[in-house]
Length: 272
Length: 276
Image (cartoon, rainbow over all chains, first blue to last red; front, side, top):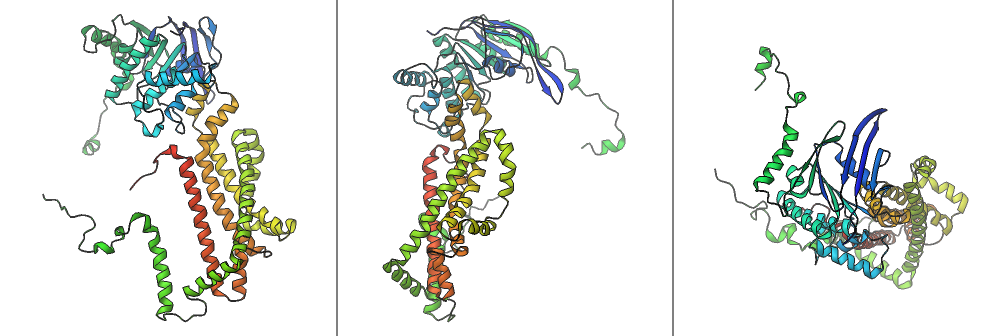
């Protein structure tokens, strides 16, 4: 079983410069993630949850605060941190096995070990028989499974998932959530899932981090002390889901409710 | 409400055997050439024309056989193709290098880009006077001109292809800690390949067009273009028409081989275009 990492985020803040103005994206985010833990992060769009992942993976830098993996500050991207994006991002000119093999391009393994690892991970996501297929021949769900295999093939200590199933249909999504849960249990690595689907967050996470926007910060962390595999129809499951959802609907958003306005007769005439 | 169930192409108007769709698909491209050739043949067979500016198909075929037999045709065609291939290869090679350099480096783009974009606006044939002064009228001048014809489309499409590599793919490369050479060889180059291929495809067509142009304007030596010039000067309509047919056939063959190669190299694109 590979080593799973402890991820420590302390006082993390990030701003973007937009036309000379400073736009805060993340404000003082602190989060400690245990080895092998599954943490879900939910929030409305614009709450900085994707930016948080891009900072942890190392695709963005220039932040304040600390991101520590096993006590070491992260620098740039590294093979010990894997990511899966919302789009599969497979290379269309490579076959399934070549795409998975990309993850091992710079791994310190012999050719034979690399071939074995690719085969094992294609089997892990249940795509035996599709090794030589090109991405245009795969469905959306199959492509995302290839992306899971590619992200896991070099055995990262932490896997980041950026709304990985957001673009899939409901049935495929439910199936892949189950698959991800099985892979997480089997591989025992730390996973961080960013999503806007509360049910998905509760179904998969040991903890659900609720974020709020402008600027992005942590509003609340909800524990999900349910045994796995979880039953979406279960009462306890529904109660936790309701609890998380209530964070998004506890008060009406005043700015979205328009004041009723006096209308004159001419306007009424055209209101049909 | 009743709906009409009549098929769109009603058999009452088009007899089945005369409908264009009755021709098997691989042969459909031959319908118009065969019709034109038949018309040509019939025009003389039934005496519709007696013009001196037009000769019977049979005479063109006879001339073709005679010139093929004497080796005259092969010699001319060989000379033209030799120059075309050489010019195409030189122009494409330099074009790939320049296009890649412009695409990969902002600094080089800023330095070379404006000059390149100005020069590409100059009509290809406007280079002929300069080229003939510098390189004479022989093979060297023609090959220089052909290289120039192949150069521009390759540079433009290589540059465009490299600049439009999706950022999403470059991020994947960063996540897997690719080095600069790995990024180029495994992401940038393959992603740009369809566009680069379009450039090479255009270069092939331009090079063949320019071959004729060069032989027409830099009249020395032999070639298909010289065959046409000779034919016109001596009023040998059969030779002129033979030249036109050969030029067309070579162009068709070049186009066909390029599309076969593209289909093989870019099989990973699948069927990306609409099927009606």
